[in-house]
Length: 117
Image (cartoon, rainbow, N blue to C red):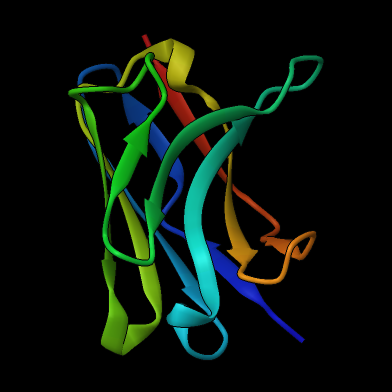
């Protein structure tokens, strides 16, 4: 059973920074890529950033230049460093892992990020 556990969310003022962590059970290389999405009630889930098994990264347009996704292979952990936060970044941030086997992907429970103006 794959488990993804996020942490690091909280309340921050606009312009501030937060760093989220996602610890995955087992070897991180089981997954084709891992990433972060965010969800606001009543809105569609939005891609924030992904990192592939080869280290290639992809970002949503709204966070480019402000957020950085990285990983620590030894710790089976993916990070999301968020800088210059804006009130519109307020959301539940969910960690996602996509397995090499098509159709198998996993989600964490999410960590709330609230940015005050």
